[in-house]
Amino acid sequence: MTLRLAVWSGPRNISTAMMRAWENRDDCEVVDEPFYAYYLKQTGLDHPAADEVMASQSTDWRKVAALCQGETPNHAEIFYQKQMSFHVLEEVDRGWMSNLTHCFLIRDPESVVNSYARVRETPTLNDIGFKQQSELYDYVRQHWDPNPVVIDSAEFLAKPEAMLRAWCSALGVEFFERMLRWPAGPRESDGVWAPHWYASVWDSTGFAKLRGTKPQLSPALQRLADQARPYYQHLYERRLRV
Image (cartoon, rainbow, N blue to C red):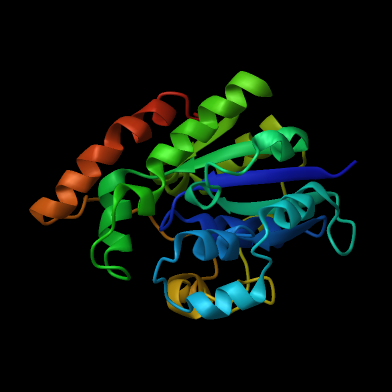
């Protein structure tokens, strides 16, 4: 039976590195942000390579949901889905999520805002996904799983092997050492937007070391981080601990 693993995060949240780790398993195939084209078509937002993104994926959420509920091309035992929480807009019926296992990847708001603003200068709360992620987390808890796995990025980077082992254990799958290292460079599974967002992951061969200090933000960006903090804290209190 396929384990369909939907890992929900916002942008700039080691989500691509985490996708690399799981894809480096022999029993896993991945999909990279499958709702991105739908999200751009519906919102009309000016993201890097927006036209290329919409040409590369279905913009029909029903077709994307069917993909996520299905099998991988090679019928892998684990179907890892890198999902952005803000891509699934309110019009999307959440029923498609019922046969997936949901996990949530979080990062402190200051770090997310600082990193995101380097690519898009004036982000909003909707852009960074904290509110949507918190709402999805509560929905999953209410309907399917009272205790979905929550992983804090900073704590993960401090102890990547221990955290991966604990995560695999919580999911009932075997941990493999190869999850800690991967070849540098792009992969066929990367979305067409990768050249605009994935530079650091393409240069990497493993998880980066944790940075010790939080960034200093402009007043406007700090206000945005402050808006996001209650949503972050809601999940942080229920995070996986080792």
